[in-house]
Amino acid sequence: MEIAPFLAWLEASGIGQLMRASGVWTYGLVNLAHILGIAMLFGPIFLLDLRLLGVWSSVPLAALSRPCVTLAATGFVLAVASGVPMLAVKATEYAGNPFLLLKFPAIALALVNVALVHRSAAWRAHRHRALTRRERLRLAGGAALSLVFWLAAITGGRMIGYW
Amino acid sequence: MTRRLTAAIAMLAFATPAFAHHGWSGQEGKVTEMTGTVVQGVSLAGPHGTMKVKVKNQVWDITLAPPYRTSQAGLTEGRIPVGATVTVRGNPSLQAGRHEMKTIFVKHGGAEYHVYPERE
Image 1 (cartoon, rainbow over the protein chains, first blue to last red):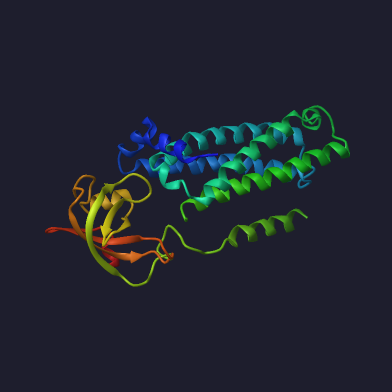
Image 2: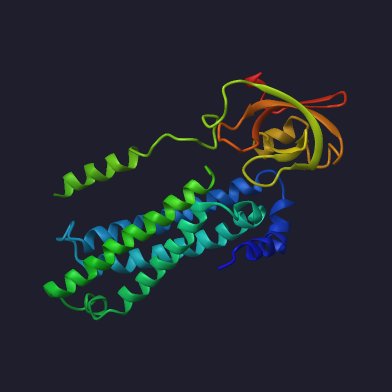
């Protein structure tokens, strides 16, 4: 897959132009929004995944899952909405950045995992009854993958600037 | 179990290697001065101000201070035209084959821009 043409298009786009022409604090403030988005995304995911892996098992899963998923989804939207403009500032400079190639596939895998977990019978069942051992194992597997993918995405993202 | 796990996570979080940063640890300790031609003027978009200067057929990425500090030093976008001769002083990247310099000071004609005065 060629990403260089996409990066060139993004840099030349209106978002890129606006970001480059809107003052010396813009990048920093958008970066702030990105960090808040990531905090809001990963905090609840971390908590929920640990619960699914068997930590704090006395806390009812159904009570935890709804606020965690809502917060994480909000954080994801905020992270994307701030991340795209930051990339657009000088998108072509990231063309050879290996951490970019870690970050975006990791996000894609993380989202596929979210979709698979949410469609599973075990996830649907957790809202109204106690889970069987087998169902708990299914969700624990999803939680482990979730932690791996999101941590890889965050690691890749953080390291982009250090390449 | 929970307490042990929390401790393990905390340790992992603080065990990240201290390698080359946005900071100066990835740069040579020695300050280098060079004179060349501006091929891309100052940009104040992104985490740092940047420009490109050609020195003896080699284009150098000139990394300036963050945008606000660079502009406060008087070095705003469009201040130095493309094609102008400038002298830059700073710390080149330690990475082999990478022509990037974190820049302390830019001189253009009679104008001097001290973007990191505390490093001079």
